[in-house]
Image 1 (cartoon, one colour):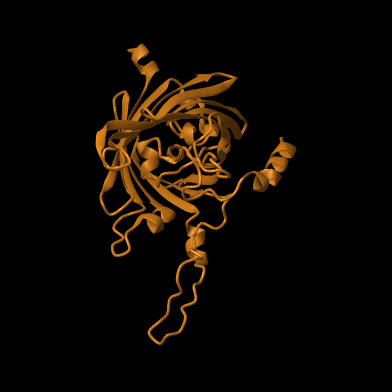
Image 2 (cartoon, one colour):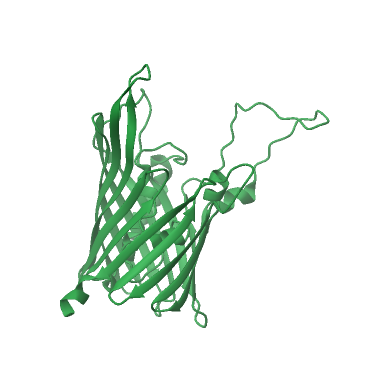
Length: 345
């Protein structure tokens, strides 16, 4: 296994290139599938507990505490665009914990027009991913994988399919207070050919993510730090064709590469205040989201996210508010329950 991982990491630079900023297809796979993850900054690959949706972002996080957990999540994105996730996990003792789900994104109704601008009706578009995966734990380590059948459909025009894979690993301390995770996300290939120009590639949004989560021993706080886009060291884009800029004295303004800004774009920070077993408060910060999506004259709370979790009898309710832009926030809702609880009743 060590040799395989070493060889795999060695050849990754030859397989991938920078894929941030509209250079790939099926980008909806990177959306946060749950309200809890959205509240923690949108990405978390290291929280190891009962929440079955975390296995979507890192399959190695699937564990026996998720047994018979069902989750349903929905979020209003932009305009009338909505997306969500429905999943279920089942543990087979001594073998593995399996999970499956459906992630969807609906773009709503759009106006159809001909080349002259004459409206001819309406059409809809959607993205769907069917996901199955599992993980096996041995000692303090867990390994897992996801398989995704992905579809993008534009009503009356075209339907594209792809096959994606996730490979993840996790480390869990003896007490469970410290966990670390690593995942290679969205490896795979297209099953159908996109109608693009000659020489243009349509890769899946491959990404390497690393993360740690730590629960303080004498304080009800769990914090998480996640490193994203590890395969792409430089995340800041410079337009080589941009006209030169001059100061008031006429001197050329030299463009400098902001190293600190580039470094922090790789990090997502999240924290959970575990006030009680039935009530949690959450917050997160995504620096790259803030830098890319805030307006030039008003930053607002772009990049920040907040949320809470409630446990009411057999149900867990999660809510998150995340800001992508100055226009308005996105609201995330999720309900999860243990199917086994109903059988006991």
